[in-house]
Image (tube, rainbow, N blue to C red):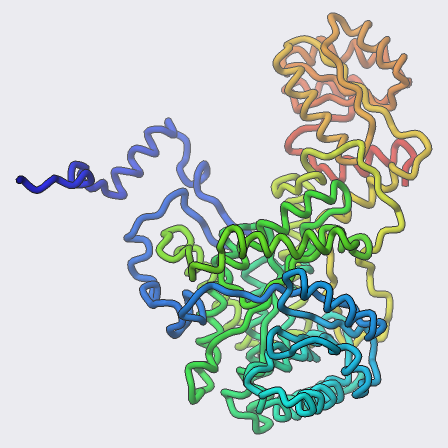
Length: 617
């Protein structure tokens, strides 16, 4: 019987040049780079397609999971991660009750947050951990100070319970550099802080799976740093700790093992997956430079937290969609543990409902989508492998630049770290204001009927003047829009925008939809219409509707005819706006028409100006 011919053998190989020729033909003369190549915020270009030849020179992509430099993960087995939920410890008894409840509902990692300096006593720890089997889960403590006191009490508790040291997982997330960066000052000198941390690390050397230092990379992300700078500055902070600890007699293996990294995860789905993979490779390179005894020391521990930068208080249920894709990126990228923040956490204390949804988002990924079954599922994807290499290259370049200038601490003290974060944050803010970067429900597709309380909790400017350094300022991208929209919400009468659709039915409808979304972003009441046959009837209807703003929606070639007449009929009764930037715009300005809106408008500045003219502050 003749051997069957394989189907793919019937197709001849196609070269990259042939693909490009076909694409350029389909573009019909349009520039390939301008039309299809994406320039990322991080400073590198992403092509519309990749082929095997594009990743042929990338090192380590054939390494299996668990093999140095851990591109494909630090574990050779399944892609398991810890499902973490944080608990504020105001009362240890109540915190313990909550911990027992959520452990019964699928959580296997606890983060106990002490918001103030606390007197850590044996009684406090016993109350907090009553009924909790520390061998079975992760136990994490986030403290604002006295980490050594907390560790001593916790360590004694482990001894009393006869818990084996190699069974204790989790950490005390001490981070004096992070506190200095966020608060602008420390309660002691930087040198004393490093001495303190070195003593803490030495005290915890016997707990092989318990980390006492945390690199708070999420602070960069929540200040708008972008992926590359968050990774680069986090690596630099980790390197600063390694250098300071080894200078104080801590061996490399123990110093590296004592550290964990916390990254904020944003909604740039594939970039976030690639960032996780790049982080493992780059941290292995950093630790390797200190000549560790074991390759195990080069493994990074990553805790991921869904970021605050892109979260909104209007249409807040959209935050669930954001956190879901972020959780997917983190877990597919190989995070070791993950906190999904409740959808309402940016504007109020999370409810039982929102916390349950946040837990279940991870449980669905693990128990129903089986994300824990396959290690590094993105391996071999030309696109993600190339993204990983690009992020690693740019992050490493910035890391090296930071080290040449004296390292992380020097950069923090002279302000270059803060300036680097602020530069990217301002670019992102500008993109949000101009709608180059979309934020659903805020600068595009708003829910005009949504209202929120003006007493929501928000990031505020730090007013204390006694800073040692400029603090890193957390900021949500939606805050500027939310502030002007809340000003509108506080008004007794909501401004009315009347859409005077006239002329070309297709263009008038398109521009009416654009205008509705434009003014909906600030919460104005928008009255749409099916179209008017003449300017007089349109103006009459607008006056009857008591419109504060009348927007003419038509085609460019009809504006020269309709707008002057509408402007004359309307007089001072309402503000007149033209939807678009027609060729006759200069002539219309000469006739007293000053307001135009288009895709090129700075949405935020334009809405602020309309608020000002309507007397809304």
